[in-house]
Image (cartoon, helix red, strand yellow):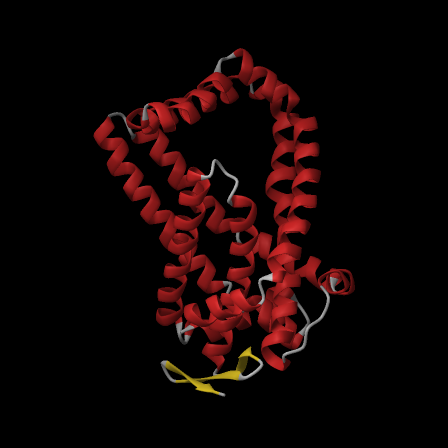
Length: 306
C-alpha cells in the first residue's frame, strides 16, 4: 500500500514537481558551468584521443544500428579508462575538481532539496498543512545541510559497490554473448542495491523531522524501525526502483530526453513521498492522503478512514 498511496500523494501534490524542477535547473546550470570550467583539460585529451567521437557514435547507433550499441558502449568505456589512466599525471587536478563538483557538491545540493520536499510532505501528511517551498528551503537550510552531508557519507558504501559492479562488467565482457549476460547481471545487481539503499534510508528524513538532533542518529534510529518491516518495505522499494528506471529510460529514449525534464524531478518527489509513507507504515502512524482520506496502518494492510 505504500506504493499505491505514494502515487496518490504525488498526483495530488504535483505542484511540488514544478518547484523541484526549478530548483534542479538552477543547480544543474551551476554544476554544469563549474564542471565545464574544471574539465576542459580532460575534454581536450579525450577529444584528441577520439573518445568523444566514439561517444557520439553510441547515440547514433541507438537509432541506426541498435545491435551494435552494447559493444560500442563497452569499447568506448574501455578506451575512456585507458586514456584517463595514461594521462592521470597531467589530469589529476581536473579529475579531482570534476569529482568534487559532480559527486559531492551536486549530491549535497540535491539532498538539500529532497529534505525540503520531505519537510513539505511531512507537514501535509501529518496535519494537512501547506507551506511554501522557498520559505522552507531557507528556514531549514541548516538542518537540511546536516541531513545532506550525513546522507552523502552514509551512501558511500553503496556508491562504491555500484562502481565496482560497473567496473567489473566493463573489464570482464569480451563477446556479444558475455555483454548481454553481463548487462543482465549488472542491471539486476544495481536494481537490488538501489532497492536496499532506498529501504534503509526510508526513515532518515522522517525521523530527523520528528526528533531533530543528529542526522546520523536519525538514520540509525530510523533504520532500526525499518528493519522490523524490512521485507515489506524492500518489496515496495523494488517496485519503486523498477518503475522509475522504466519510466525515465523509456520516455527519455523515445522523446530524445525531453521527457526527463518532468520525469526526473517527479521521480525525486515520488521517492521522498514513498519514504514517508513507508516510514509511517512501519511505525503504524496515521497520515493524510487527502483532506478527506486518512490512512491508518494495521499490520500488513492499511485501513482507510474517510
